[in-house]
Length: 113
Ligand code: FES
Image (tube, rainbow, N blue to C red; front, side, top):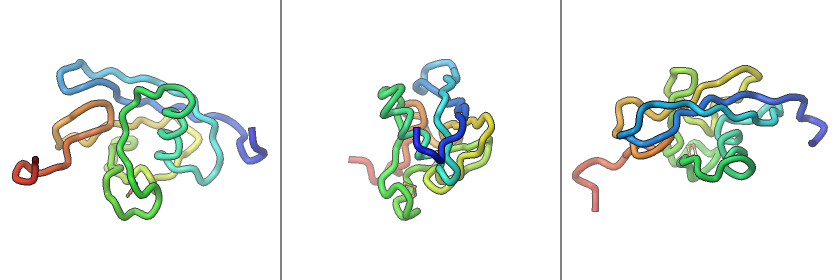
């Protein structure tokens, strides 16, 4: 553990697909001040659960707009939403069709291939 990491944060993440009953999985993530929610989600995928579906591209430029999710009930870009040392709940966008976990369909009907 690096010197700046002093405890863990619990992330409650909505899991499953559109046909599944909502279920939440909890993950303990090492917390370092300045981390984003996306940093924590990427850490989960790398160290705990590679099956967690998330979407991102630019990571922190706030350019791609693909990382949006509900964080504690508010629509946020997860790459700029700061992780805080408390239990945080992350869910998919509620007004978009759910694909799986935190991934919703963001392509409009007339742009689908
Ligand atoms: S990852 Fe590109 S805006 Fe968040």
